[in-house]
Structure formats: structure tokens, C-alpha cells
Length: 441
Image (tube, rainbow, N blue to C red):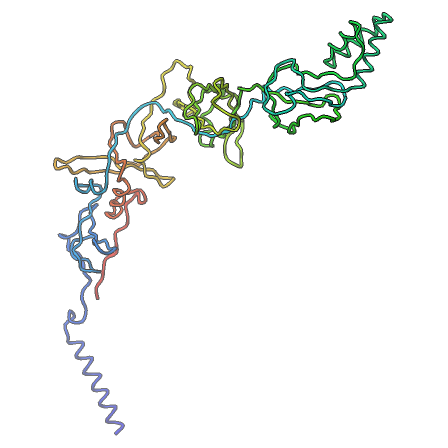
């Protein structure tokens, strides 16, 4: 029984092997689908499924979903395709490279006009005048600030009266110089005229200005108004005064524009509440020789006068510098008689960039039926410019010439089409690799 089972199994195996060996090959395996040369697409053409994410190199049905594939041709658009893709063309121009540098800053009083009222003799405050009552008070030269009670000044007047009585010219001269140093010449004149010494007298301001409290000079502590009963030492600041309509603005220019600012350069100002301020004349008075490492910007000081009282201290203003570049891409001297350098200019919207590689899609040919063929133009760019209206332009060093037409809208879609077709594009300078062939088993 056991031998019969083994003989049956061996016989079945032999019959099966013989049957497989005698069958035709095509009944067991399907050959790899190879596109015939007549159906291969031309360079720059691919076939894409309108439903699935599939791209092939020959026409036919999609092997994934069975839909008819459509041809993709790089850089060639019909009128309907241009309309659907929203393609808009612009011409490359030539002209001077004029840029608007924008910055913001807060208005503050001009610290160059700061003056400090200082008594030269110690004493105690017994009375305050309007100049010492409120910040923002406008005072004139000679206005009283406080009444000061000073035993030291009272004793000096007694000595002066004695010197006058004795006729001691040397002592009289020395005492007069002391009163001059104290800025109390009227007290000395009154004693010489025969009046008696006084222990309380006014301290006046030798100059006019606006009373301010905040420190307007670096390193100075905030000021405080004097109070009645306060003991004051000699040379203690009483008031800080500034010119009321002289201001300065501190702005920070970004590092990419830091070389486009010069001392003496004119600027334009505007504010949110007042709009443009053409009547406020301002110029660059100081430019920092180094960058602020924390914000990567260069500090710039502007000084201005505002006689029409359009600005308030603390107002936020928009500052616009106009910079025309020379052939070396530095700011040209506006006083130079030489004509401004001219550059090839293209709108920023027409430039596709990876940050390292820059390209534009240029019109290469127009067909009579409205079709447009584009070609890829690799670019070497100069600085980016912004005009007064806020439009961005690039200086083109190589890759385009004045008069060329380029796609300003829809360029990204044209580039995507080139990637699908496997031709040169922004991301693939040598063209995208061909898709792998589909095998069916």
C-alpha cells in the first residue's frame, strides 16, 4: 500500500512538470509593456492622467484608473490656457535704480537744544513760579523760577555792604566776581545802591524754552520739579528746557538697506493721523558706523523743525529715504553732474526664486492662433528696489534685456507645467527625471 502511494505521487509530479514545459510561454507570462517608438512623446512632452497622480511618456489610458491621458507640453499655452491660468505679461524696462527705503521712528525733542537752569548758591525753596509748576510750560529768558532762601547769599551781601562802606576796592572786586558767578548780579547792584541785604530772592532762567521732565540727554536721570521747602545744593538742576518745535527722530534701517543712507540726505515724513508732511523739512544728521547686532539694523538720527505744529513728541512717523544707486550699487551723489546709471529692471512678481537660483519665463514665440511659447531664463539679480508706490523691482545683471516680455502672473503654473513635462524648470535645471515604466504581470 505504501509503495503504491509513492508511485502515484511521483507520477503526478512528472506529468505536471511535463505539462508546464510543453505550454506556450505567452500563456503563463505577459511581456513587459514597452512603448513603441511611434507612440513615444517628443522631448518636453508628457502625458498626465486628469484624475490620478500619474505621469507617463506615451499616450493612452491611465494604468491606475483607466481614464484617457492628456498631453502636457512645456511652455506652450493656448489662449484658453492663458485665460484659465491668469497669465499676465510685462515688459522688462531700463532706467535708473531709484529705491525708497522705509523706516519708522518716534518723535522726541532735539537733545541738542537742551538747557538746564542751575542755582549757583545753596538754599531752601520758599516759593514756586509758573515755570516750576507744570511740565510743558513755555518760559522766556529772565522769567523767575523759584524764590530761594539762602543764608550764604545773605552773608555775602553783608560783606559787600561792609566793603562799600570801608572803600576796600580789592575786597569789593572779589565779592562782585562772586555774585557774578552766582548769577546774582542784581543783588550786588542793590547793595551797592544802598539797599540792605535780603535772605530770599528769585532764581531766574537765563534762557527760554519748554519745560520738560524726561531725560533728553543720554546718561541723565529724569528731572523733577522743585518743591516748596526743598533744600537745594549749589549746582543742583532746577529745570530742563528745550526748544519747543525742534525735534529729532531715531530710526533703524534694515541691514539690507544700511549702505543706502548718507548724512545730509533728505527724507520724507508722514504720520497715521496727519498723512504726508511735505512742509516738515528733515535731513539725516547722523548715521551709526556699525550695525545693531540684536535687530540687524543701522541707527539713523534725523533732525527737523515743525513750525506749524503738526507733530507731537511721541508721534510715530513713517520715514522714507530716496536713494538712487550708482554703477557700483552704492548711493549716488545727488549733487554730481554725471547722469544717473541705468539698469535693466524687472518686476519682482516675474521672478521665481529658491533663494539661490532665480528664473523668469520669457516669451520666445507667438503663434497666429494666439498660442504663446515661453522659455526659461536663468537670472543673475542685483538689489531689490521699492518705489514710492510700493512696487518691487529687481535689478537684472544678466538673463534678460530691455524689451523682453515675461510672465508676471501665472509664472509658477508655467514652471509647474515644465516640471511635469520633464524640461528645465526652477527646481530642476537639467529637467525632471522621466517617470518609471509601469509593468503589468
